Length: 246
Image (cartoon, rainbow, N blue to C red; front, top):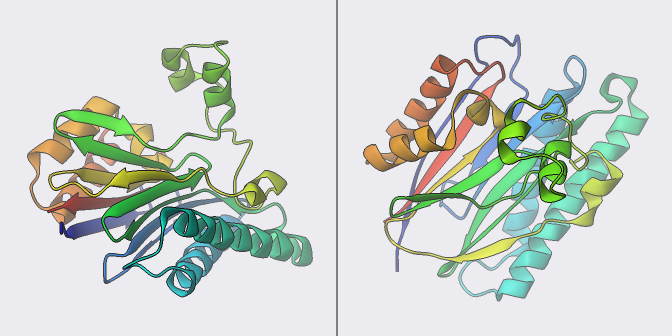
């Protein structure tokens, strides 16, 4: 059966004082999580930290990674994410320092010969299969909603004033509705990117595809994508996990 190799990189970037991104990489390659926090001062950091603590812990408890059926895995992912959302909401209400904090989350979970991919917010998972790069997750942003409604074009969305405004994230009521998890066959040669929007703030999809295609080692690929995003003018924290199916 194909195996997973992975690499990761997270940096503050050129314009921020602190890193509100967080990530979790399971040493056994069973799951990978990226979160991008939001909120004043240290609140965003706390939200992303909670997401990357609670979700991995619950995934490890709820899932049998050798044999669970797809519906069990999807329900387990929902439970883990909903629990993290509840914890973030509760702390946000209890502690004034964390008022209105929130975070995105994007995750990839490997069970038997399948991958399960989902997200809440606008952190993304991409799949490179052959020469075709596809965004697997859907952004929960106002601009994506406008694109889906046919009100604006995808090109308009890149520079739209609401492009960073989310209608669903962890720390919101809508964040407790679970994850639209997609199931994908584990296929040798596939390459995945899990990233915060700091990557896409500085890189367009063709550039991501080129770096993923050209660099054979996932750690080097993750580092190269982060550096290219910074060189491309990203104004955010930049976090990237690269997963190769070998």
